[in-house]
Each structure stands twice: as C-alpha cells, then as structure tokens.
Length: 218
Image 1 (tube, rainbow, N blue to C red):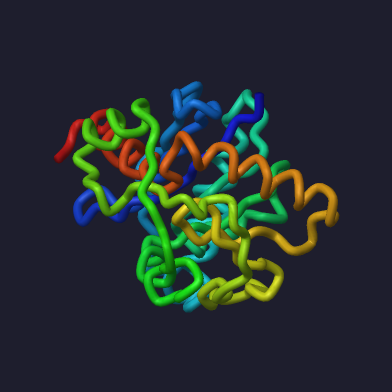
Image 2: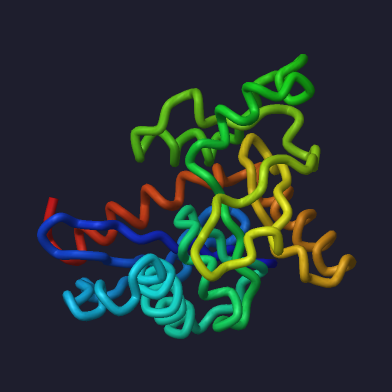
C-alpha cells in the first residue's frame, strides 16, 4: 500500500515560519507527523537573499528538513506552498503542488462542470465533518479524469514549467514532468485511487491544527 506525504508551512505573526509534515496511508489514516521549530530570517538574510529568501526558507530550510526526518516511504509529497517546490532536487521523493484555489479552476472548466454528481465515502465524510469542512470540499464523479490545466505559479529560481498540472478528484495537482512517463502514470493512478478516500486538501488542515497543538498556541 502506497503512502502519501503532505507538507505545509504556517507564518505565525509572533513565532515565525513553522513547517509540518504528515504521512497518510491510502485510507487517510495518519502514520507519521513531524514539525519544525519556528524559523525567523535575520535582517542580514533578508538583505542578502532578497526575492530568493522565501524559496530558500520554505524549500531548503523547512521542506527538506521535514522530509529528511521521515522514516516512511511515500509515493509523492504534496504541498500547498509553491515555494516549497524548491526542495524538489534535495529530497528523495517527488514533490507535487496542490493549489488552495483549484475549486474555482474546476468550476470554470465546462467539461469538469457538466453532469457532475457528488460522491463521498463514509470515512471521508466523517473526517471532513470533524475538521469543520463542509459539502463544497466533496469529490465529484469525474475524479478519475486527468486533464492538463494551468501551470504552477512563478517562484524565484525555480523552473515552474518542469511541473505539469492535472485534475485529480476535484483538485488540481502539478506533478514533476521530469519523472519517467511510466512512473508518472503510476503516480497519477495512485493519486486518483487515494483521492476516492481522502480530500487531498484536507490533510493541510490537520497539519495546521497539529502544529498549533504541538507549539501550544492558537
């Protein structure tokens, strides 16, 4: 059974940047969780790095650190922080980008919009309700369609054209294009299978709540 990794970073106004990494199995159950200590760039770093500071902090400092702590293999690491993709050359697993704005993209796509019927498993429904996620996050019956759409947002020092975007479930995910074609097909199939039981954005809510609990702040 393939596992799936999720990395996100929160920017707390008092504590600084804190990253979290969650590994789930295909049923959406947590297998491993790690979070970083707060990171605050120095004034010297802000001056020297300039626009390259964010990819350095989110990718090299936080995402790479979190991935290196993991003891479990994953088919892919998903992140909703585009700057975290800067860690792609530094970790042992492919890292893919999932946007918080993808529902809008799908609503504007007439093919995805037509004849769509909501479906959801009881397990996912219960998990979504626990985390306060309502009906608009549920899956549609075209969850197995894979259609190329908009590219990854620009990141300083990163060739965003290296990623290709696909619709998986009711989410948009950009996957590294450099992966071998057969491996990429396997990865897409795995993501489609997992998306039947796991809303691929929901785990980021779990991570944020777990970070708040670990660091004891609201």
